[in-house]
Length: 448
Image (cartoon, rainbow, N blue to C red; front, side, top):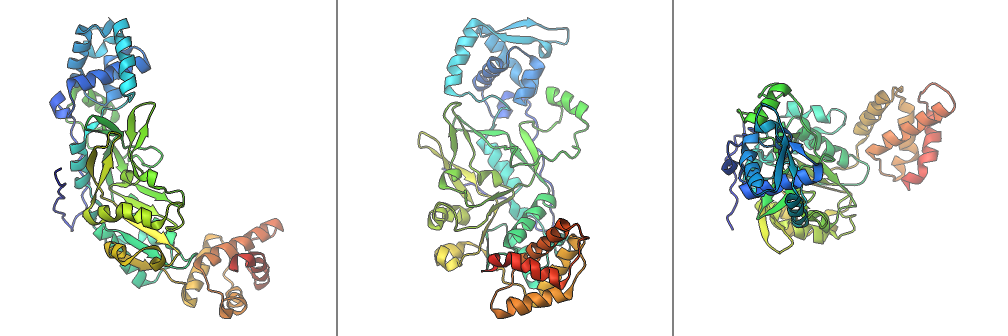
């Protein structure tokens, strides 16, 4: 099996990847005429009689690409033309014959996939390496924006930028409640908003197997205006293939996918739809070109060792292997910024061999008094509440100076409790030492 090669990266720019260009022929589509004919039969079988234009739009291909397969199906008496107008074949209405319906039923048993035509695996691999996360540029003044709602020290902030630029894995650890997840999500926000858009296929074809990639529940479509013109022009170009981008690809914002305790090993493998006989890409695969955050690492049902053994080679080699039902494997890119976030001791979770493969380790410790007060003041401002220094002093005298470790999250939890008390009493939301005493007494169980 050939080893996937990675392109040379220009570190000084962050250009948007070029859109895949619409194919001009069946050969350029990377598919065969028989494969497209089967897709057309399944589409008419599941959706009923279709106009040629609509068939082209369902398959996300120019009509001239499906003209030959339609002609072949008509000659084989699998489809018939029920009508049309003077525009030509693109306006013909196609329906299945009895023979065609019988053929469709056989095809549906083999694979029931209906939708945008898949792209070849090789095309997906090539596009993936055009939009790798290691190609992103990152500067302090730009990175500040997604972290503006957080209060973090400069040394911690300055450790995050190189991690993003490297595109390698990041291990964020430390005691709970101090912003590990917030920092990881802010990295994701940077990647999602500043990192630009990328293109992913609705599906790709690997050794005759259809694998769906685009997931509307995880991927955010980037609907900014295209350089190809307005929507009316785009419809015409899709039909004529006049310089438009390949509609089998979806323009999305760089994905940020977050998983927690629900993560299992089976989620990292191809999911086979036994009724429809096609595959869905694993969840981490859908994060290619973006961020994959494993929150609360170490608290999954599956052991950390099993998860890390699954990833130890992809982290090192930047590619992974997916296995289809017949046991055949194919190589795919592992091009994502993967973040492990945990409040457990890393030494209890992973061994040195794995830690060596994680390029960046970021420790998030309990806030110092001055940082705590800044966080406290920031939350007061967000809640439109006055800052009260006596309340902070009380917390330190009563709890933190007596052995209880301060947490950044305490500020939010306590002040929101004060807010609830005020609203319950129909009082203006405000902060006093007495209200903080009452709120902390209510929250005290969380401190133990």
